[in-house]
Image (tube, rainbow, N blue to C red; front, side, top):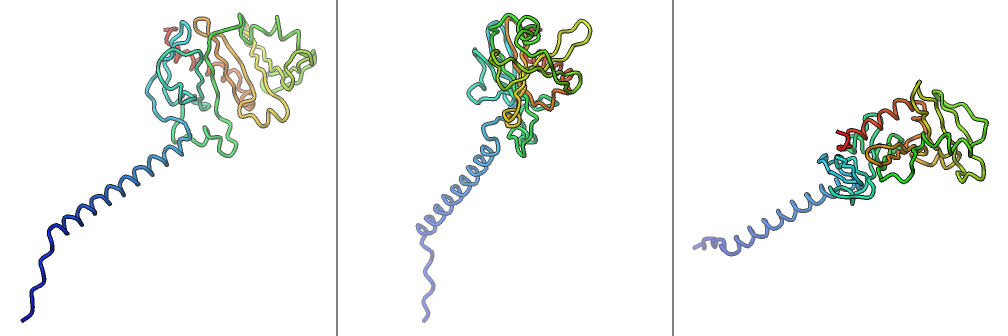
Length: 237
């Protein structure tokens, strides 16, 4: 007479079930970790978050979305000596997944403008320094640039070696546009070789660095950057 097959051992079946559950959780954990790591690598230190942080510099309060703040350690509300931002031209928005190639400068992309807010240490901004300071340390001859810009070389003793002063006359009653730009190899290798500072808020300075290709749009650029800064600056309201 043939013996009936032995019934499965309940303890053995329970053990198989437990192992299966453990393996499932491990697999899910690996998948989640891979997704998180992939997102972190794609972000490369950037943040897509748009929550607003309030940063106090002197007597000024800046309300800025997190994805516009350049450095991770500064992405919090509180008191700071300076605040560094980076924004994509022309919409002047912060980092997003759709614009990550521009923020990571893929294929040499130059569409990012860098802004620094800090307490003012000079009584005049760059436009205000043209006549009393820069006029005495630049060469008399200039080279024509785009959209009314003229480039002036600095005298050797001025201390601005490898730089040129870009100047354009403003409209009637308006101050001139003045920026310092790197020249030669340094300009070609820099993502933002031109720099301009303006006085803003309560005894605060805004310095913004931008690609030289934007010099031809200097009226739009200056108005856009100033306008964006005033949006962030709560103490002007």
